[in-house]
Amino acid sequence: MTETAPTPAAVGAPETGFAAARRSKRSAAVSLVLVAGAGAAALALGGLDPSQREEEALVYGTLGACIAQQLRSAEACIAAYKTAQEAYAATAPRYETEADCQRHHGTGGCTPGGPVTEAARGRYLPVMAAFLMGRTDAQDLPVQPLYPHAPEEERDAAEAGTAGHGGGYCTGTGGRVAYAGGVSRVHVPASVARTTSTTPRTISRGGFGGTGRATAFSGGSGGRTGGFGGG
Amino acid sequence: MRRVAIPERPDWRLHAARAGFAFHTFDGAPYWDETAYYAFSLAEIEDAIEAPSAALHELCLAFVDRAVRDEAILAALRIPEHAWDAIRASWERRDPSLYGRFDFSYGGTGPAKLLEYNADTPTALYESAVFQWLWLEDGLARGRLPAGADQFNTLHEALVARFAVVAPPEGVAFAGFPDAPEDRGTLAYLQDCALQAGRAAPFLPVEAIGLAEDGRFVDAAGAPIGCLFKLYPWEWMFADPFGRAVGTASTRFLEPPWKAVLSNKGMLAHLWAMAPGHPNLLPTYFEEDPAKAALGRSFVRKPLYGREGANVLIVRDGAVAARDEGPYGGEGFVRQALAALPDFEGRRALVGSWMVGDRPAGLCLRESDGLITTDRARFVPHLIAP
Image 1 (cartoon, rainbow over the protein chains, first blue to last red):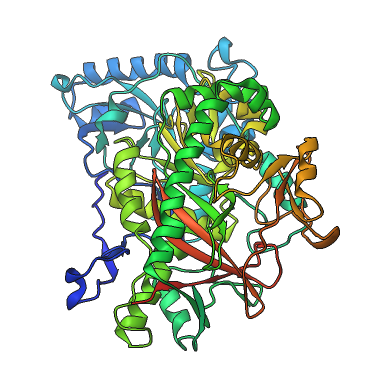
Image 2 (cartoon, each protein chain N blue to C red):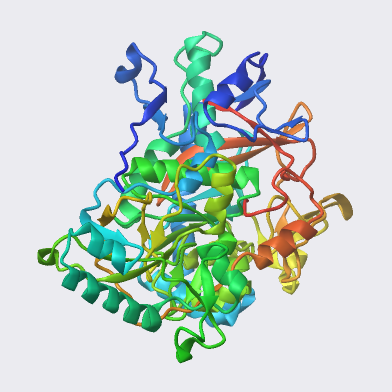
């Protein structure tokens, strides 16, 4: 999951000649890395953090795939799989409704909680799509269950052809694990690989925005913005 | 301060497209209008706008310090009680602010008069910081504008520098409505500035913000949000179901909750009470205050919460001179002395004075045909005459 820091494109250069000699009350240069050219749609893809350290890790959809690849011993694979399954039942995110769950994990990415663990009866969980383990024991990476990562707004962007961001997985704390399929070796930001959840999280959504929608769309001014946040 | 008519560049829309300025026209009517510009003297900029902006901002901070310790003030501002702790805590931590915009009535003579402080969710930022700047540079390069002309506009540099100070290393999530093009444009520009300051800057639809049961706000993928920029006003945040969680969440906000005290028009009545006779303030009273009679038969009535001129009523000599309808006013009104916007050949100009952090950082001018500046106003560039 390596991303390259953008190079600012100068959309305007400072006036040349005597510019340096006089006192100016304006910016010397204005550069844009996102807004110009590609347009705002590209911004939905998320941010960049060039300084982030990464860990090499392994992602397997099944225990068999782990054993067959022989990058880790069969014993290590079995232990990791068992740990992931236990963590799944104990810590998988819980959602109030199936629709809520599918908004984040996609259709087919969710399951009723009751059959997984009694504590999740009446809730919905993402399916455990894979598990994450270290490339070596020396890394001391915690084993984690992984869930389908398909938040609604990114799916929309993908359908609109603006996203190059192919789904992948997320951890129980919401960290992203980019996974192209077929390649088990992945690079994961250390902050994602080393952060595990110890309790299941119930996340409620839609608690911001309602007042704005109600106010903006009832507004009589009918102007450019539809009366949204601006002032 | 003069209004100078000038032919627009025939290819300005091409320039706009290249610079990512997508919301320059609305419903066939221009929003960006370069058929004229406003020319200021350096003294007008520095003495009449820049210095008063810095002084008023300081007065505003003094008012916040007073308001967070006086529940009568918070109640008078109609800020819901469940928000008081969040506002107080954010001020006691000195949570930093990013930006704001004073709106002045100023026409080149006499002191600029403060109409309001858009301290929470000001827009018109990109066009002020970038496209207005490009307009000047292009006009100078083509010899269309007076050689040696300058502009009061350090916004871009100031914003990038400010993000480097106020944004945590892990970055800032930028929340707004994805289907409001102008807001989206403002957010995209702020994301750009944050990226240039070396911070991650993902967009997050405001309705996708989640609240985990441990009290943390989370993004669409469920990851905790350390710092959230929201182009969504505090009074709406507080009225929403998640509003009660703001005070206990570890998420920090731009603008911080204490800005709710300043973006409220009731603040104007308190400023006047703190500094009566201040040359840049207009006498202002709460609608319930009998002292409002001092304003006589000419005044402006404004809703405590309200934006873009909505629900503003102007009374001159006892008769309604202008009014704009809208959804605001349920929380009450203030009454402000009338300082009619200056008339330039039938157009009314409003001077917006940008603050980044605690420093004045630039200017924007918006023109209306009527006395009230609404969201149909046109953005007209400015320069400082050589």
